[in-house]
Image (cartoon, rainbow, N blue to C red; front, side):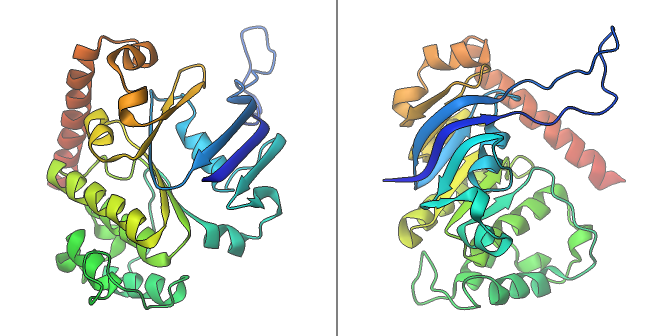
Length: 280
């Protein structure tokens, strides 16, 4: 069953005023989607592909945060251009890359506020244990117990990501779109989080679209994969169907044997940057 429909969608970002070529002409941004149509499923869906292939833009369009210049998009049967802000939030939450908050409110206070003022109104059963409360379960799963008294703007990148995922789960939207939500987390945290998110989808019926660079984690946890090509073509299927060595080599322009090494380099670079921040 499809929950997202793209019908003849055209989209490109606006030109940046003053961004001129060597001849003094306005540079026009590339077209990202041109007459794009698709029927897309619910469940736990992973978006993979190189940077610049359209993953973030797709999720912004699908969630109603951006609108197409031509064509129409439906989310749960409702055209996104007609939705109020409240309706958008009811249908979809969005986790942006590198979200920052200039607030010194405590994590525990914010978790309670989001839970009580979102769609769940402060009451929902746990996913792993239906006798427990959802908020208490998520605090445990994402290791937030020790962060409750910390101020949000004092968290490390990995801590912030875990808190933001928790916000998106306890708000209660029908779908959640996550743009690289785990890149700064430890490997064991990524595995534990993805296992829980997949279970969350199955138990609650919530749809999650999540972009990730870790191909091994997509293979391990995703029900459905959207493989984005550099020219913005998209392959849709199970991990076994669309993540063959030939497919990945075509998309990334690297031999499959090198992709794992490339992922590891990225992880190590992130860890080095995180360690540097902690010493400041």
